[in-house]
Length: 280
Image (cartoon, rainbow, N blue to C red; front, side, top):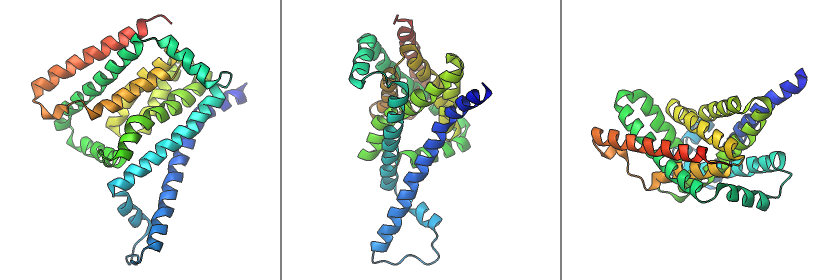
């Protein structure tokens, strides 16, 4: 009994270890590519260069960050998508599962999730805009983390990674695999809270960690409520993708930011209420 419970605890954290190993593998491949490119180049390596200094210079190039980030998310999508498919839904064919889940959602719930996702993104941006002057040091670290994560925001690899591939990859990773194992160990609510905390910590900086944890709670309850990852993926896509067309609150004055932020919070609350009050 004890050994079985210990195994269940380990399986909650094994996917995280796999995730870190995948990151290390992608960066190792990047190191190899850098050195092969240098070897093929006619220019000599600068004297006194180290692996660390060369990689820092390479990773400082925005397009390199963009392609590396896309490769990492695609790898996560493949590994954790297959993991989720063959461990947690192996008894159903994929087309049958998707069809039944879409039928369960109907038309109104996806619409509500789309609106709520856009509102969630704007509300978050409004709150961060208001907090930024109060916490300059923390936001400096946050901006640096975002820059290293996204790279060139207008480059197609960054757009594809952040706004399409990442929602699928992260939902398979956290709400699929990790939450799937956590529900075997804990009741549903503690399992959702634990998964959300791990989701927040995985982002690696305080500001992203806080709002990722909050969104992780909502995404976890969506997965539990509908017994499907589709609602969470849709919400996640709308949160990330709305950055492409929603106005930046930093462009407006404080009263307008507060007013529109409160409005977005009310829209988000209404969408959540609608989604979770519907019968299965």
